[in-house]
Length: 57
Image (cartoon, rainbow, N blue to C red; front, side, top):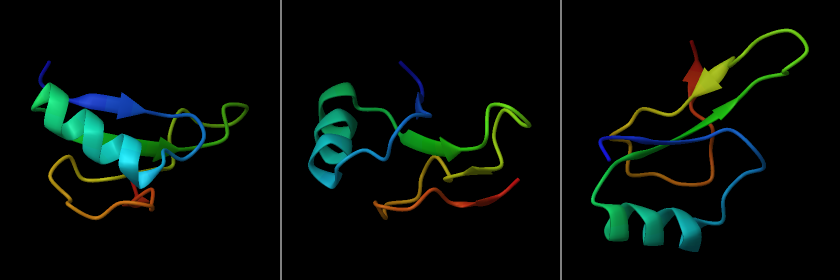
């Protein structure tokens, strides 16, 4: 696994940290209205902060 991508409800910080440690891969979270776009915002794969969806793409 090189990168994990989540695009549903926000993940709890505990879940994010668990996945990053267990899978040894960066985790990105995305947000976007599926009716209009695939993704509007996405976190940087190497951003250590949790509880945000990143900047617009």
